[in-house]
Amino acid sequence: MFCTACSYRRSFIETKGGLQNVFAQKIFCGWDFNIATKKAAELKSSAIYYELKELLSEIKEEKDKKSICETVRNSTTKLLINVSTVLLLMGTGYIVWVLLDKSKNYLDDESQKTNMALVTAVIINVCMLLIPVLFGYLRKYEKYSNQSVAFNITLVRTYMLELTIIGVLLTFWLTRSNNDSCWETSLGQEIYRLIVFDFVISVILSSFLEILRYLFKKDCMGQDGLSEFDIARYSFQLIYTQTLFWIGFFFSPVLPVVLSIKLLFTWYIRTFCTLHLCKSYARSWRAAQTNTVFYILTFLTLFFSIIFFGYIIIRVPISSCGPFMGNSYMYEIIIDVLHLERGTVFWEIVIFFTRPGVVAFIFIMLCIGAYFLRAKGKAQYKMVKILRKMLVASAKDREFLLNYIANVTASQFQHEKFSSFDMDSVSAEYMNSRGFDEEHFADSDSIDDNYITNKKRY
Image: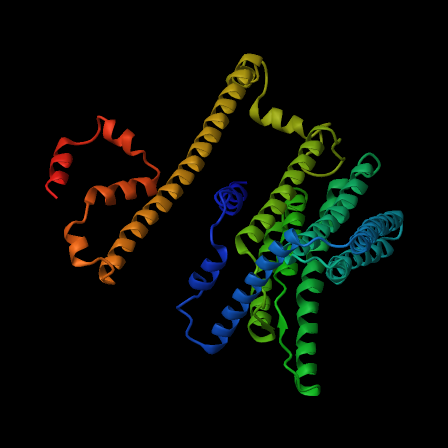
């Protein structure tokens, strides 16, 4: 949550006042002078080119007005693709539910039940691998002029796919909690299988296919077999793995060890594939805002996981096996461990902080703190505007003085004119150019007498 807030502040709040002269900054200040190789220079040049192109497309999109037919055609295409995406997500959720239900029906035949559970895990991970590729293919037909918008839409669709699959999985086992004597164990086993097969399919199998594609293009076709590194897909696979861990570690104690080993091997395999089989991405994404989007999605996943745990602790009955058996609900274990009984010190502390008066006081203090920070932010924003105006005024001062220096240097002032040069007229002209009233200046008590005396000496 802290990382999400900091990233959002850097990407959106601190730049709310607007970045002035963006194109000049990109052209004159965007180059990295630590670059020492020709390949790195070409990559940096390509990145600056795509950033300028993206900024120009944003400005052009604001100014250009599309025809009615083109607008209707684009809107219809986007609507059809969005409807297709929703239907695809619904179909994926239905397939996952049917597979889980079939694996549940094999109660007598343990081998059939195990095989069906393995098939379910394989199909789920294949869907997580192929459907995001399909989303990226559909994005080309939507014809977004801004690539960042297209990237974020594809990311949200992939995130909805993850929520659909995991949501169906959790809903299935929660609805079976009253009928299954060990539903916690079954859910932990399901999460364990998903993590293992995600490593096999998304890491090992996909890396092996990338090696085959690289060798085929290089040896058989005589082409450069390097492919672009898809940072969005690989980053989202980490979010998916992290979501499975957050949900499964409560039901499978060995899961943290398995996940640590998986991430260790994933790191070395991805590093090898990236260094030898991939080339740098030609388009430079706005890293700060992209990082903020990933943080927000990760925070939402953690938030939903906390809601899920709160629900099963309070509302879902405990099964007949597992570490919590002997109680009706999981929260009873917390009450027994913390001795939440009347008369204890901890109970009195909880009762004190849950009183309406204390809750209202805390809420009022939070509101005051939020109002203070908001007012402080507005004051700083106004101060920035004032400082910008002062910089502009300082530039006008330099421009005025440089004009007179240029006139003297160009010998536009004759010697006789320069000898009778009236500094009062120059001062009056300067004050008029700065917007000051001469009569107001003359009548003002703030004029120093020494300044007037020295000026008369001229």
